[in-house]
Image (cartoon, rainbow over the protein chains, first blue to last red):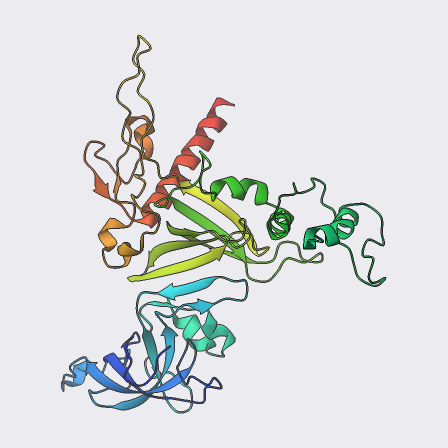
Amino acid sequence: MLGLKATMLVIDNSGALIAECVNVLKTKTGHGMARIGDEIVVVIKRARPISSAPSASSASQATKVRRGDVRRAVVVRTKYPTRRPDGRYIRFDDNAAVLVNSKKEMVGNRIGGVVAAELRSKGWGKIVSLAPKVV
Amino acid sequence: MNTLRQRLAPVLKRAYSTSPAAYPFSSTAASIPSSSTPTPRTTSLLTTLNRHLVSLSPLSSSYLPLFSRRHPSRLLPGSVLTISSYSTPPTAENPTPTSNSFSGVLIAIRRRHAGRDTSIRLRNTVGRTGVEVAYKVFSPLLKEIKVVSRAAWSGPAVVGKDGKEGVRRKPQLQAAKRAKLYFVRDQPARSVSLRLRTPSWTGGADILLRNTRTCRLVSVGGIVKQQRERELLAETRKGGRR
């Protein structure tokens, strides 16, 4: 349940560390909060420092994100419990998201952390396949 | 006075009978299927119904004592469990669909409606994030609840050579002093129940905890792994004896 001003960790290798939600895109629900698998618009609040040396742009990284950037992201973990169809509820200890562009492609190319399995059913198979662990 | 119970008595009587047309008010309504062991009837209609619904679950007879309030062998919060659940409901065509499992510390047991809505919370650290999963115990999608390590208040009794019982050993996994361990979210070091002491009888099986004298803080993963290794060792020992 991430709405305006909600902060979350960014768990891909795009360079961003903490993002703040600014807008929740096309949720059909009335409350307008983002759940797992929803796309949101975020402002990067903290990012890794970008070194200007050419060796920094290695094969593992294409785009580097700066503090203050406005980007899109997909929510992958929420502290608010999500209900699974069999009646299970899953709750993570923090909120996390993965940066994405307007074409629904990931900005980073690696994910460092657990993601929720809801992403698969919401159409983010790429994220699920890159995640080291899916719960 | 014509109570609800008196009015429904013929319905209830017929519901537990084997006759096909049990419902007197409609010919198309289906009757409650009578189970092989009829549910004992209590004074409350809803309690009887809830107990009947619980008995419909296949493993209910083994789970009811585990999660009851006062049963002597009930699970105490702080125990480590592994639960495997199906991703889709098992049907006649596909009785065992794909399942996934989750291990964790039991931090809460929620009991409602004569056991029908029993749900348990397991907590574990996956990666570096804490994850809590709440399972419905009597859900048909729950495949198996495996008790990896049972938390207890006191450990095995120490009986001397003369038959005298000494002071009981400390338990392998200390039970929590609370029913709900939500404080563990802020104090993760106190979750896996706290301290794990290896009793000396495990011998060479405690590969992870070498020093049997000191307490060590162990993770859920460590406890599950240790239990698995213990089982493997027991199996190889059995195989050797054969």
